[in-house]
Image (tube, rainbow, N blue to C red; front, side):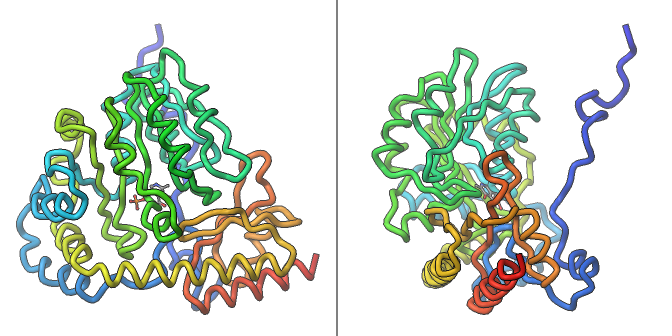
Length: 369
Ligand SMILES: Cc1ncc(COP(=O)(O)O)c(C=O)c1O
């Protein structure tokens, strides 16, 4: 038998993992003084001044390790959501939580059902836990398909990822469909709702996922983030609300001890105390998203139905070609690459100036075809 090396074959032989380029790298590559970063669904505005001040103040005690359990933050969130502090676990962005839930639910060969195309973190975290990703196609309107997700469950399924607002399509699940999925997911499956865009959904009149999940009599998790509506993607704070203390305790077993740094914890507390800032972001996003949608439709493009701080457009040309042409004008967006969606482009909602620039650039690119 061949001797096993220090590194597991699956990592040794893996293709080089690609990470998103920084804005600085893109400026250098494109030879431009500035680029419009509309590829990562970031908030286009800086965080609230209260958050910036809290980070500066917390930096004074950066010689100390942070609170491993984020207790102040847990109390503030418990008060805001009505859950117990024992149901909350904090992570270095909600991205990290995807890995933790996969670790506690999956063993080698177990299956995780997930929508596709969707956030790559679901399949990635499943593979890290030696599980098997099982994809379920989206509904025609770009939302997750509860019937398809349920049909993909087998006796080997232990985890189901659902994105009530799907990234990259933006399609939103209505309360009745969510309830059907929540009720029909078997008890031996951890049901994970990735609620990263939940505030945008509710702002657009969509359902609040948490009270619907709270009715489930089997393990569940609702994952949220401070990256989007609080403008804190660079600080990395996410959290999970779990069905019980027992599930939360299982997740605590696998998290890094000091996974959320003290500056980030202080920032999140300050962000929660400034809801006016979040509401401003939500209003701004709705306005600019609408401008993007109507501007694109006026050009004859199809704007996929959706909510979120991004919009997906169906073009008459390849998304890759369009993204490259936009990049040449300093506008960075995300082409879809999945079969059936090759003509789609996901654009993060930016500033009002970004919207104007995107629409003008798209018009020019289409006219040149
Ligand atoms: C659907 C979805 N889930 C999770 C995340 C991760 O967010 P973060 O790690 O910044 O909390 C993102 C980020 O874009 C996302 O789109």
